[in-house]
View 1: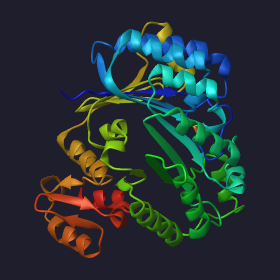
View 2 (view 1 turned 60 degrees about the horizontal axis):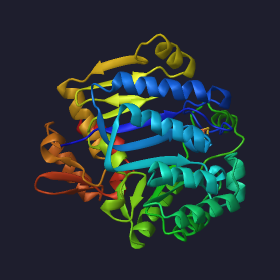
View 3 (view 1 turned 135 degrees about the horizontal axis):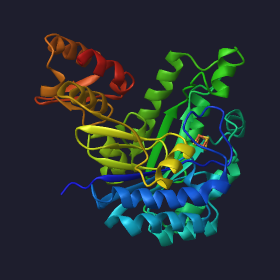
View 4 (view 1 turned 90 degrees about the vertical axis):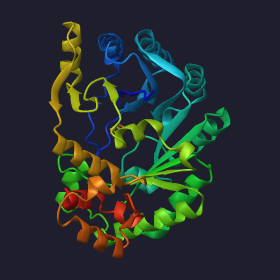
Length: 369
Ligand code: SF4
């Protein structure tokens, strides 16, 4: 039976990165109230889905919680919901937090995937991003995670920084590969204009690499990691074979159900989507009053579901069925052109994006919509 995935948004960070537009607060004194609220929300949601085969602790910075706070969080979830034996349990971590006490606690809690937000192995790049960790902290954290024997180590990197071309970026990739991670995520830096770095870019304080340079970085990353045994299985994600893909994130891309707990978390239920209050204040107030902290809800009609299937499917190596892709009169000619351009591969019953197709996955989905 298909089990849903469980996502928990941990909305706390020790410092706020100037490029980030995720919801998070630097307010550790609010963590106890948040932990109580998550447990209450898990109990309120239990009826819809009591059992899960993935748990993803994301944020924010889940690793900014202490070992005791993380234990309270996971035990609170387990008091309401069942995590099946063999469940994939992922924690996103900042390298500066991954000391031995936290790693011991995570292993004891059954966490088996650690996704480490290294972002860069270049000290100047880390300073530009104003990350709170150093390169030496990142290397030490990766060594400790490896040594601890977690089933999967993931390294997250950011490319497309000012003045970055292939050589410095290649060195970042090689530095990550030294740790033989099972999973690598490479995100292009995008700057929302409401963030401090977005404002600085708008004021002309620096320039991001041109679109052509960013496309080159992207395609050469795909080539290099594929040569080194990784499967480019989603726009930004690489795994050492299908067994090491993120089982949880695949639920999002495959349109499978998931429950999101915590402020700003989203849930999906086959034909409907809901989302929680974005701020901790509104989230806590709803749960204190004994209400679900849901801010919005929508039911998707057949047209919207097809659009989602196109947009999400074309982000993954499995692509979409030809039946879904070729519903418009212009679709066959468009698909033939995209195949000639090396953007997709056409099978008798499926459309599979290539890495060049991943580069423009959203645009292809819009054209086929
Ligand atoms: S640590 Fe992550 S979630 Fe927190 S501010 Fe930085 S990028 Fe955003």
